[in-house]
Amino acid sequence: MEQYLKKAHAWADEHGSELKQLLIDLCGIPAPSNHEELRAEFCRNWLAEAGSKEVHIDEALNVVCPIGDDGGDLTVIMAHTDTVFPDMEPMPLREEDGKIFCPAVGDDTANLAVLMMSAKYMLEQGLGKNLLIVCNSGEEGLGNLKGTRKIMENYGGRVKEFISFDGGVSSVCVKAVGSARYRVEVLTEGGHSYGAFGNRNAIRVLSSMIDTLYTIKVPAFGRTTYNVGTISGGTSVNTIAQQAEMLYEYRSDEREGLAFMEKAFNAVVEAYRATGVTVNVETVGIRPCNGDIDKEAHEALIRKVSAVMKDVTGIEPGRGSGSTDANIPLSMGIPAVTNGAIVGGKAHTREEFLVEESLYPGLKIGLGTLLLYA
Image (tube, rainbow, N blue to C red):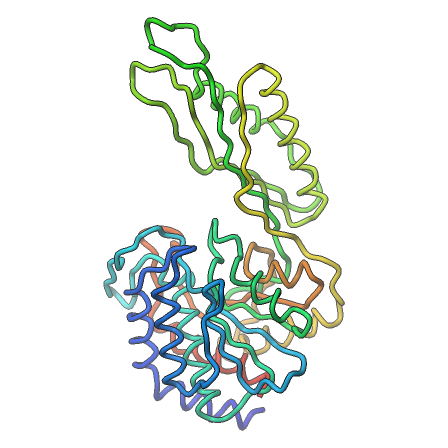
């Protein structure tokens, strides 16, 4: 393994400029969740030029690149193509003080570039057995992990280990944070603000409902949270609102926590329906928690990935929980982790940045991870 790593690290040092250019090219391609077509096409063509004869785009807009597939157990290694931002035009990119600024540059575009370059090395060297490299769709927000769901639907019976490149180098995500997300709409009679004064106002009712939801005391076990992310509604300043809606979610790293929150949420909804207003609830996303996983197999995967990261950075990464592509295999009892290869900050904001020098050791982390399966 040491011989493989030495050669791969030398290759990484020689291909730093290519990695940076790939990152810049990817940043210039819009890819909001559920609209990843352009970036998926770019990734497929790039991997085909890198030497893959089997790379293809599946029904969920995943770019699937098998390496050395002989029909045996598979290891899936992926990074997501979609961004949390809705923009369908290229987002601004600038370089300043050793940083690359661009929305979604770190989450997850830099990790995607690292994965693609690492796959190129494996293809060039003829290395890897039963690897499934995936530039996957739908990790963010209302993407609802559609890409990973499709991969596990198509290959789940063969997947023995699962790794997602996402986030930074400081920790490894080993536990799935599950969630439920809803669009909640309130409808009332509304009317003219003067002529129909006294009629129920949907905005006021929704505001009261939100206030009630925020009185819920979360369970003491695990970590459970909730949030109202957006609200909208009404017609004009002189109209009693007939309609108002919100996006609401709750999360927990324990299945029992999700069950507790589901019961509490439904109780609030029914209480407001009982007052005579219409409350419509649409489920817009469900993410599961951990299932029953072989602890020894999971620990072995965590240690392997952590050792690769420590070998490059000199620092033992921490362990944490999160809502990532790994949620799906973890819920199926398959050993899975999510780890990042870069350093950056302000993820999910327009001021997101990547520390440029972290790209190059990041590539060594990517290469070292894929070489575990050489």
